[in-house]
Figure (cartoon, one colour):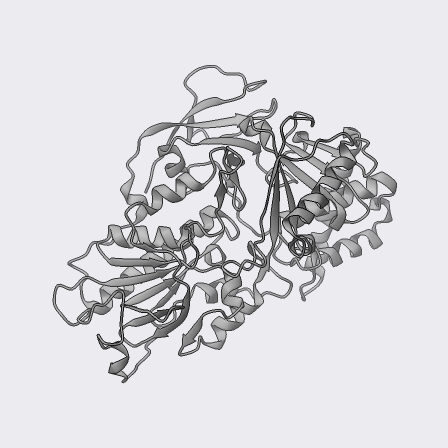
Length: 531
């Protein structure tokens, strides 16, 4: 799409400060230049790929740190990810696997494939009611079967209705049709907890999640792994030697016919041949960046219609461990809003840390509290399970929904989304290209999806500029994945309990007999092949 402008003064050297390339596209031999906006993993991946292709690249980040929704905190004396934590899909197809392998990071495997609890297995939970009594495992398993039947019946509801509806509405229809699936008493509360876990996966309440699209996500094989050292080493590795400007909040983007001008909050301006925008979808929805000319309606409607969920973490460090040796602790309740769950980091890291996770409306409500009040709320939940629980020595509280740099944790399919919404989100506009987890082809809401979207935006930007500037022969097309050669390295997987591994034999080579029962950390030799 061509955007023409006759205002040459806009691009004069007197106006610009920052990247200034007055002869880009005119002088033979000048290298293409790109501004990447947003220092999360998507922006970093885009900048890395373009820099590897000999482009002039600068990355502008509004915060005083890089990583975006990846935020590893070390104040407890151990890494605690207050944002993204998991590698969803421990397999060769995951584009981050080679980086994690190269850095020899440890993955704590929290679930196998096709778990109804998404990134956790049922056997790794201990559930309690609000009176502190543990829910019998037999009941948990029985309600799981019922929950699966309910979800299967919602597929029939979807096929019967041309218009979309929420998952919660579909569940209500199913229960009206099949009263035998209704639960009472404690079993009803366990069912609400299952709904709570579904809401956590989408970071949205069930009455906001699209029935049409909720189960259409393409999940990579290999189960889900918690990165024990946190995601920070990955961010540092990928961002090495990039020109990153922190505390540069972008205020305005002028999308010219030949160049792009980016104005930051302090009035300085940066110019380049193109820009890649990887800020969170919540920032775009909030209209915190002015576009000149304005983004077209097809782009604005896609930004407006796609949902942005919210999930927050409240991490608690204790002086001693007083909870059972399971991965997850859960509290069942009469509504999914009041159900709670804690990730037991002691199981994975050896440190006495519990992380409470709240999604949807509860996540927003907790942000209205002070850090101390939020921690007190979580302690009330914990003391329902363990009346003698000690007070935390330290606590951390995330606020992704109200953070002006983020405004939500990740995207989800809201009720009524059109089929082409992701195509419109990804579509370039003039010299502007778009990345971020919401623009991922198949893996929205994941770190590897954000990473891949950044690479894809960079590849599209690269091809566009090389064609426009006539430098196809001078600059090779370089993909980030082409840099890493095939080399067998150990990927460490920790496991909770005894279960058979379902790894793809083309990915994992186990060099000796092994037993997974009671193993704290076992090494598997993984050979990564890149096309």
